[in-house]
Length: 93
Image (cartoon, rainbow, N blue to C red; front, side):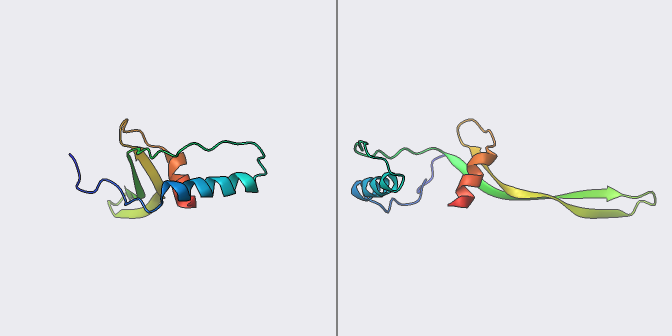
């Protein structure tokens, strides 16, 4: 299925990206580096938050529920694999 807008709009020019990379490298005190023309690569990932609940019944049959796991994860759109590490980076930014 193709979406009309599969990604957020690009809001930076190649020159702005190059300048930000240059500033970052200079902050890290890199003396010798070469920045080639940046390229934009799209990687299909789904990011989502999840909340789970545990339901249990006691000996009388009364059902109760309690909160289970909560978190943020991401799914690789090509392989279907969950990648928690990438979701952590996403939250950081």
